[in-house]
Image 1 (cartoon, one colour):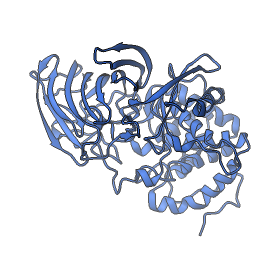
Image 2 (tube, rainbow, N blue to C red):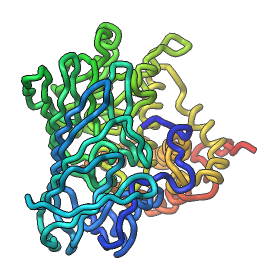
Image 3 (cartoon, rainbow, N blue to C red):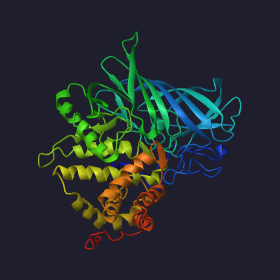
Image 4 (cartoon, rainbow, N blue to C red):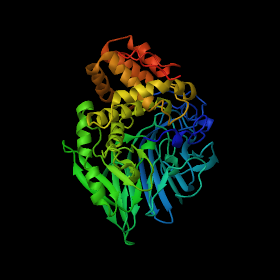
Length: 488
């Protein structure tokens, strides 16, 4: 994610997805490095989004059927959720916002349900015909409808272009504007999608395109499968007037990109750079973790976002810099880094966001430096100078008060830069490569990263070193640069 404070500063404690009902009790998140909220807590204990998500169960799979009508922005949809109870449940809660619920079933039986307003969305409380027991697998099916431009109680993830279509930008708490779900990064699941698009439009979603089904009215249903688990905030569905462009990475990974219809010659050479970006990053982290990748360029978006397997970019990004260089490639690398750091290894809660953004800024900076577009040390020195003041107002990199600030982006990269100077490049490369290998397909925290770094290096002094950088009120001295000072 590249949006800074202007777009994501949500005011005080950041806007959450929904209010969870206390009746759900504790949320035992089935993740090896997660946390376990106390019984009766609202949400799943996210420090920045205190009402985000719901406890008492773990989602295994989402199956989303989404029938969208361009220009009017009406849609009808069905979400089928396979889940497992992690405690006895008399009710199941989902996050939703702006939907009309038509029917709900649990285990194929009609279930009672009610909608209640939350701090930034709605809570869908479902009462199954029979209570659910700890460890029980169950299914929930919700049939619903709505309009993409209808008012929401919270922030919306809908992005609209000039083509009458839409693309989804759900980070951080906006997936519930597309489907009822457990909207927390601590609950990852596999996905299938069935997205309809009328003639002249294409559909997009995370994962691989399995097949297309033509319908009598001239529209087509596009079927996608994402076999690797994904957090809800990374959903990447779209219906647009676009063109699919295809390629392969140097290792043979399928690449599929979507560019604006009629602008294939302009954007084709840009998306073709993805293969080289992948090769550069795979040399650092190992094989790309998913079965497909691509870039979606859309005029209805104003930023860049790492939707899993299909990063979303505004058309505004792709301009040469003042020196006539394609500096936008660093943003392409930034979002691609997130496929490892953020999508494959996911923060357990949003206060751990530096684990996503720090590596993305760090490696994008290295990429730009290697191509002579910038000097990474200059960027880090400038960040060091201003970070003390940012720590005071926005919190340190590991304890941000809200999302979207310099502290988790450039500040997170500065933490990694300091670590690299402390332990040397070879050890640093090993720490980062082993991180995505060791904690693949899981959720993690800053504490996990600290323990991991100590384990890999065998240097226990790195525990207080990283704590000072991540949680301290002021910058520690920069290794090798005693002359670096904070701005007055």
